[in-house]
Length: 261
Image (tube, rainbow, N blue to C red; front, side, top):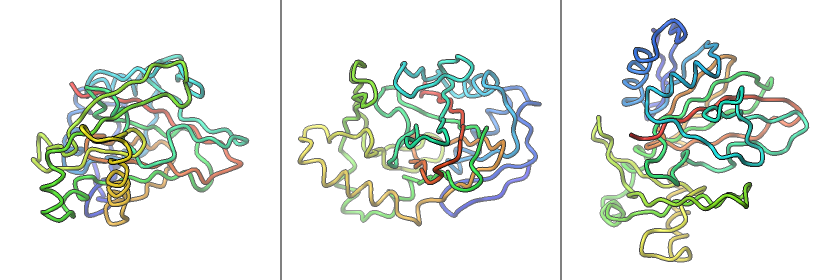
């Protein structure tokens, strides 16, 4: 295994690591150790079937089952593996258009997501990643003291599925990593509606400030996809941003997400 660290605050590239040749349990143990330290792990040159990707991610926790929805396509009919697909003539990029973490509207929420590159445009379609630990550590002690006791109401109201019931969960704004002991912000503009005990109007300025703060360039890196990349990230302490800048070209990534257990 060859490691190449990406930025001072998060991310590591992994080469010479054949996931298909390892048992799922052994591979997950090694990836989990890297995730604890680096939050985002990019394993190069993989060719996993959707079933193999599913079984590997299952080692991290119960799998998230996405409801049927407009634009949702299950890879090989597997409800645990989503096609993050954009056709050459399509405008919409499935996966969002804001910095966010996956499935924060449930409790237990998402732990690890894995995204596998299958078809890529010749240029563009990068994904940004941000460390919410680095963002928390950069705040003043005064603001940290104010934020530490707050809880956030996360909700998915199904903008693409009006017939799907709202899913809502309340999570602490500040989380502590169970292995490293570091603290990070746990909020994202896509699903965070308000702070517990506050209205949406009262909450909005602080949510918007934290959104801008967490995505400051010094807390981020931009991943340029290569064929066969399999990217793992810890949704508890990162945000990601899919960049929709490749009109006229097709892209297909497969995503599988494990929930906290």
